[in-house]
Image 1 (tube, rainbow, N blue to C red):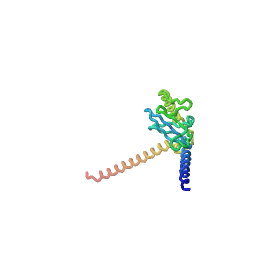
Image 2: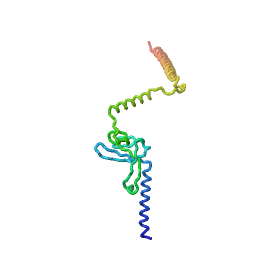
Image 3: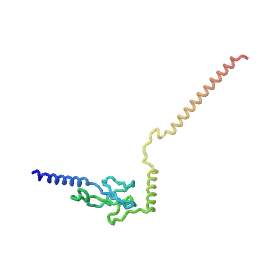
Image 4: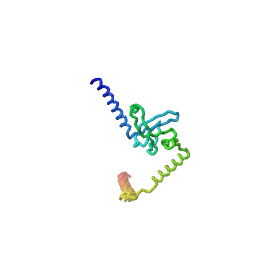
Length: 181
């Protein structure tokens, strides 16, 4: 019994590793990147991430450009697993087209037009009138209230100044009356 149990335990462990490896690749996208210098990198992402970052540059995850690919490395040599696949290059932020496998390159002139259109779109979003809302009393009459407060403060300061001037004149008259002639 001891001679048979060791191979069975090994087979069960390999099966569990294969099941775990296959399960861990569910809902994952294999993102492959080809650098400018010919180096190749890859990352596992979920399709909900939206972006994958290679060498400090963001690349968009586009579900319409996904293809399938068989993973055959590691434990997957025994249990090949089918996953979603995207291929990127250093030339573009978008993945290669799966229909013809061409690189998606954006011409600098096209990029300039896209940037201008997005800039104009953001400009019009910020300059468009907002939905009208009911103005409160402070928003409606705020400027008038500020002017009235400034006038009241001005009148108060002027009256205090005039009363101080009268008090100084009275004190001066009293001092002058006390001086011997």
